[in-house]
Each structure stands twice: as C-alpha cells, then as structure tokens.
Amino acid sequence: MKIFSHQTVAYQELLSRAQAFFAGHWRNLPIKTRWHSLLIGPTGSGKTALGTMLATEIGAGLLRISVTGWMPSGAHNRAVTESIATIIDHIHSHPRTVLFFDELDKLVDDS
Image 1 (cartoon, one colour):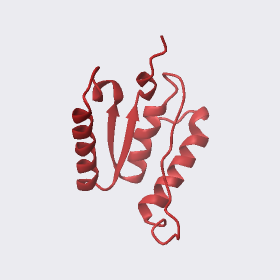
Image 2 (cartoon, helix red, strand yellow):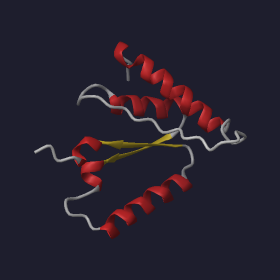
Image 3 (cartoon, rainbow, N blue to C red):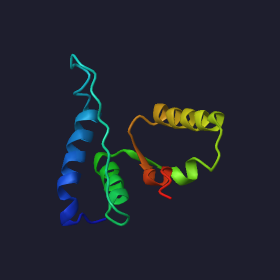
Image 4 (cartoon, rainbow, N blue to C red):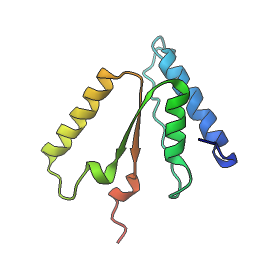
C-alpha cells in the first residue's frame, strides 16, 4: 500500500502513538493515558488503508469491525454485549492488535 500526501501527517501521528503504546512507555506514568485515535473523513479518503498500514508497520494484527455488519438493525442489548465480549476476548488473546471500527457514521440516521 502507498501513503498519499494527504495521509502523511495523520499516519506519522498514529504511528508514533502506536509505537509508544506497544513499547509500554505509558505504564510508568502517574496518570492513566488513552491512546485512542479517531479518523474522520469522507468515503475513499484512506482511513482503512491507514489502519492497515499502521498494523503492518508495527507488526500487529488488525481487527477490523464494520459497524454495519456488527450491529444488525434492531440488535438487542444482549447481542451487543456478546459482541463486545468477543472483541475483548480477541484482544486478550492477541495483545498486539489494532482495533479498527469502520463505518461509525452509519450509526446515525441522517433522514
């Protein structure tokens, strides 16, 4: 995959955060840190490609969850809880994982 010029700054920021996180530099801090990143952009701007390249660069697996497939219409709270438990189990058994939620914008009904 190739990085485009409009992705360079975002990729470098994500890479430095991921490297610091997986190196464990946050463990000795006196505060609890959050390493979440939210990429926002129109369809086709390369968000998924950035996540894939990032996981490859740091030698981590990529768990890509498409929200439209994960939360079917009318999902009950039990189904959501079981899905979250499955994600957590995966992360515990694969600690070097980049968790990528895709299509979050589809959760909002714009009609």
